[in-house]
Length: 72
Image 1: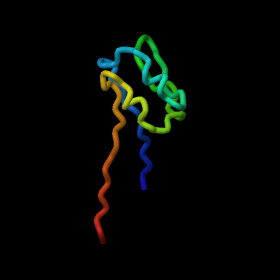
Image 2: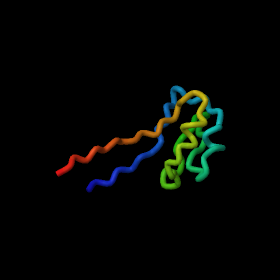
Image 3: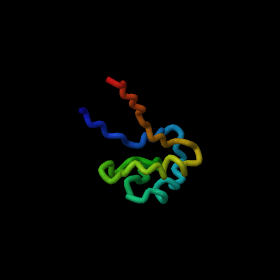
């Protein structure tokens, strides 16, 4: 089995630097750098989704993978 690490993806072209995601992040994984949100502490991210749901311009996406296992 291959382990995959999922992290929030921030579209820097959409991010307005409002800081809402940084305030909402319970693990302090996000920070503002040059007026844009970044995942500053990836190891701290618990993939809770707070940043994605609070972003007013939908600049943050939390990708996921749907896995369907076939019956054998």
